Amino acid sequence: MTPETFELSKNITQILSVILSILINTSLIILIVTKSSKKMGNYRHLMVFFCCCSIMFSSMDIIVRPIIYTHKSAFFMMMDLRGRSLPMNFAGMMVCAMAGCFGVIIYGIAIHFIYRYFALERQGRIKYFDKKFLPFWFIIPIFGGIGWTLVSWFLFPMTSVTSAYIGPAINEAFQMDINQAAYAAAVFYPPDENGQKLFNWKCGIGLVFYLLIMAIPFYVVIYTVIPVVFLFVPFGVLFLCPILEIGCKPLANVLTFVYAIYPVVDPLPTLFYVQNYRNAIGEIFVCFQCRKKSRVHVAPEEVSRDADSY
Figure 1 (cartoon, rainbow, N blue to C red):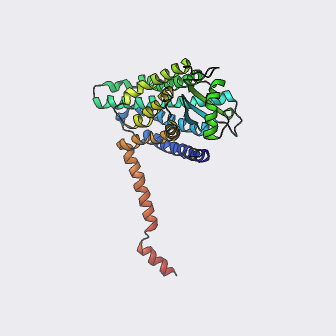
Figure 2: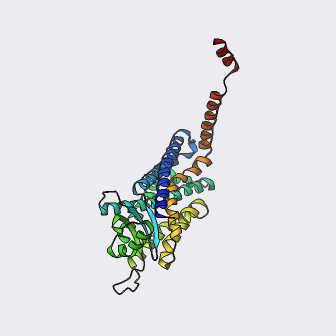
Figure 3: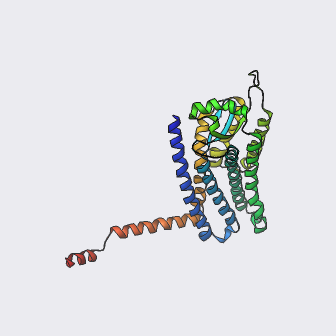
């Protein structure tokens, strides 16, 4: 894929994703507020919160328009600054905050599954989602996002060594000068002054923190398919391949699109598997079909009346 084709495809995907994410998540919020059964209790507030997180995620995505990429022993997320008059440090903070959205999302997914597990086992532990515990459940995804952001900012910073290492790859793949990009990058084996590879312990520690942050929600959702297949496993592979110097550029390209699309996909299971919401959507389609038919099919007496008027 040429740089021009990749950029066009990425921009179209990100624009469509933010539009669909806002529409779908806003629709789900309306359904949660108006159609939720009393049995769902205070969990409704958490669902609204997670919908808002998805909207924030997709809004950040269209602002930052991140590119996820790997090169030899490095993985990174970057922001194209061409045509943007943003200070480099501020743009770098935006990239780290965009990466932090991943931490919010994976812990939000885990809380969804904890609630469903408690509801299905019927042992009374659903009480832990009562009103007095709600702040605890709200804080967990926020801490996950803050943790991911801080690791990205302090352990994967923009440096001259990192820029020299990933700069040629960025220029070749995207026809972009490294000075026109803000990034958060892990380089595990940068060369020293003599060109010898040295293990970067700072990035190694950052990788350990990334994996630890992912480990808890991964353990929670291991028995399910969608988050594991589309988020945990691909990003886990992306983080681990560079430390083994295994190329995974095609995966990085795919994950750039997955990162943009996931806020659109995330609310769909709730829309389709919660009966009250599914019924409400069905009623909307039925009403739409009835209106469409009423416009197409005109009563015979009205036709004859119109003919007589002529």
